[in-house]
Length: 248
Length: 150
Image 1 (cartoon, rainbow over the protein chains, first blue to last red):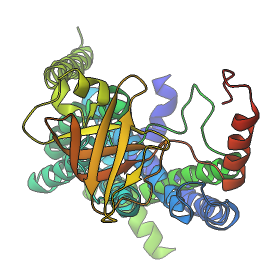
Image 2: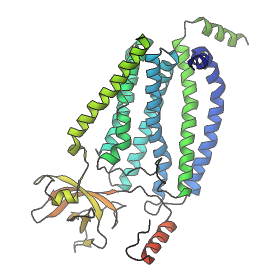
Image 3: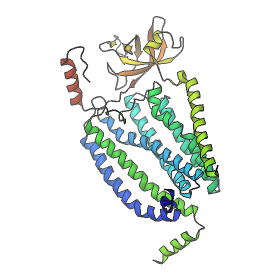
Image 4: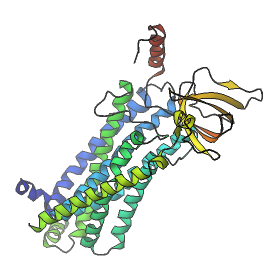
């Protein structure tokens, strides 16, 4: 099975694949963003308790989901780099980190803006908010580690170990509202239960979640190409590719 | 064992070990991780006496009373088992409603009344348009008393 995927896992082929995919992914995310934002900010009705303020959910919830999803992608890619020595794993993990950090920051910032009028406070040290803040620090720690270690392969190894250790935080974030009493509300959309949200509000939320995913993949492709250029700067294939582009 | 196998095992053990260690730490600090005490805990004396703690629960319907000074309110909190009376002087958050969850920070007085310095609204996970909420309330009012309408 690994033989079949192997050609795509080589930086050379992935560089081409990413180049071909990213415009499509950007297009897809633009369409999904347009649909999700119209649905969420214009078409969806106001909430019975929160009025118009609930609309921040269309940014807050997708970014919070993405903050955890991107972390899992980063840790898995790092693990693949460690175990199978797949260079692409190191590249993807490194490309994920700033994106994940941005999503985490967005989730924290939008939550804080919503918290002030609704809860009556910008910030509380409850289990959900604190564990999400720890996630931001994990991303920042990973980024700091990457820039502190000059040798890219050593940096990738150290970063992968940090990312794998940090995975323990992901279930804590997810279940924090179940395990402990928190000010943050419990989950609205869950896999095993009917969501406790009106359909007209839920559909834009799911569209926004898909839009965030497509956007993440699109930017990841661009960032991965940059990382490949840096990782492979002394290889023959890259020189050949670059001189091809210059002449054509 | 191939080196690849070995690395996989080492990483597997790392994840399992971290998981176990974290689980034990979280268990040890379980009480400190709770953001608030329930009203049952408070009545049972599990909450700290003589210092600040947070109490959470639902505001009992029709329990909200305003004192003549206009700023002080008294209401009853419940977790559907035990109730605690709360008094608070100040501005209540937007989402403060009877029947909704809140978290109050303050001290328990000797008379069993919780004197709050801060009241935060706890939002629930339900989102619906006002018409649906009105229809649900209507259905609840029309239904026979011991039949539960979701």
